[in-house]
Amino acid sequence: MVTIELHPQVRPLAFLLGTWMGEGEGEYPTIQPFRYREELRFWHNGKPFLAYQQRTSAIEDGRPLHGEMGFLRAGADQSLEFVIAQGIGLAEVEVGTVDGTRIELQSTFVGRTPTAKAVSGVRRVIWLEGERLHYELAMAMANVPLTHHLSARFQRTGD
Ligand code: HEM
Image (cartoon, rainbow, N blue to C red; front, side, top):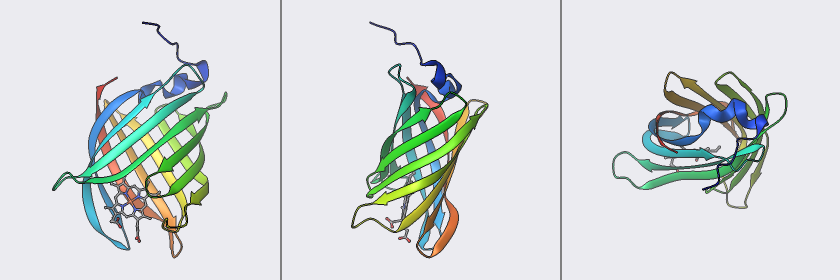
C-alpha cells in the first residue's frame, strides 16, 4: 500500500485525523433541547486540506439526525477555510485559524436551498483537551442573533 505524506500545510491539523465517536447536546431558543450521538471523521490525500464527514443520531431511538460533509483547507500561515455541505440544504463557507490544538471558524457565507431554514451565520470552535476532541457551534437565524446550538465531545476510535 502507498503511504501518502501529510501536506506540510496540513501538519497543524494532524490532531484531527481519524474517526471519532461521541455524544452531544443541542439547544436553540426556538426548539426543544436534545441529546445526540455523533461519528465524525477527518482524513487526507496529501493535498493541503482534510476531508470531513459527520453523521448524528438521536440517543433515545437511534433515528438519524443531522449529517454534513466538507473540506478543511489549510493555508501557509495557520489560516483555515472550511467548506461544508449539509443535509438540511445549507452550504457554509467559513474562515478561521488554528492555534495549537484549538480551531476557531466563523462563516463568511451561508448558502441555502429554497426550502432550507433561514440560517445566516455559523461559528464553530473545535479543540483537543487531553485525548478528547470537543466542539461548540453557534448559529444565527433570521430573527435570532448568533446563539449556542451544539456542544459535543469525542474519543478517537480508529483511522
Ligand atoms: C451535530 C449536528 C446537529 C444535530 C444533531 C442537530 C439537531 C437538531 C435538532 C434535533 C433540531 C430540532 C428539530 C428540527 O427542527 O429538525 C435542530 C434544529 C435546527 N438545526 Fe440543528 N443539528 C445539528 C447541526 C446543525 C447545524 C450545523 C446547523 C446549521 C449551521 C443546524 C441548523 C438547525 C436549524 C436551522 C434548526 C431549526 C431551528 C428552528 O426551526 O427554529 N443544525 N437541529
